[in-house]
Image 1 (tube, rainbow, N blue to C red):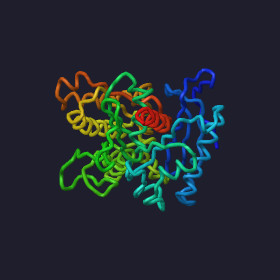
Image 2: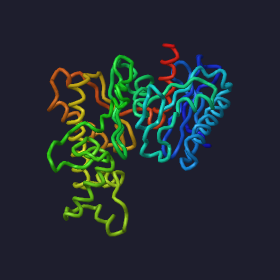
Image 3: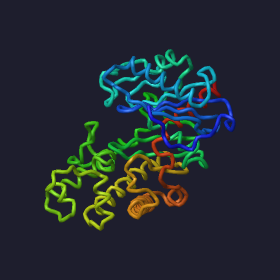
Image 4: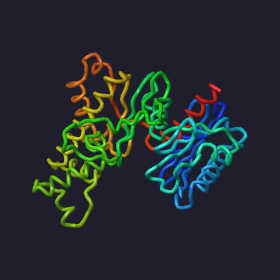
Length: 344
């Protein structure tokens, strides 16, 4: 287990009650303890070890939670509730992990109740993207708003929606799947990882950035990225960003095209939800607001929204980058646990 470099507070400075948050991924389990104001007291990460199966996974999550509580100077009995965030698909009311693509062999597993049994604490269950959105809403970039949308840009495009402090889970636990809204209705639209065509994820994910760049290179477009082919290197979104920073015209064109499609998708969401803010998270932020390319990317998104959205919406919505990074998931899971505890 390894500790993350976070601005922890001490137990003496913390405000009870305390909540644990677990962010389950295909590679790692992130776990932390936060106080009543969402400030972390401890954090750790450990390997998921999916090959050991879901029961062992539930036990490992419980062990990580216990260690995080110990690191915070607490006993598990002092944790009011645990928040558990997992990737889909899921049945949130029943607490069941249905068919998670990146957790093979964990199908139809009652993960909420098994984690509750292993931790000895009640567990609130949430979609991982909605949990990340809730983290940003609670203590991150959305803290001053009552409604927001978060899009996580990475291998895919995840989404989380908060309206009046509530996550939008949907009737079938498939609410807030923002990466799968339609941005291209043509018959020959790009294929999404889910098997359907024209989805936002097929145009605005890191996978799409790499694929569109590779297609352009194969078509003979001049670019410094041709060296990837010559040297047997994989074309990635990170390499595209680095090339754009070095003045590569094709790389910058791909990034701005990504921003355009993202702006189209955001416009649809704005006309549906009318939130106060849209927050862009995930690993693919092209350096963020402090980076020249990140600023160009964000401004291009805003310009596309301004061009397409109702003026009253585009004039008031705030579009920016997330601030919690990889910590949003476990903090948000803990926040959802807090909300559930207060309603119980």
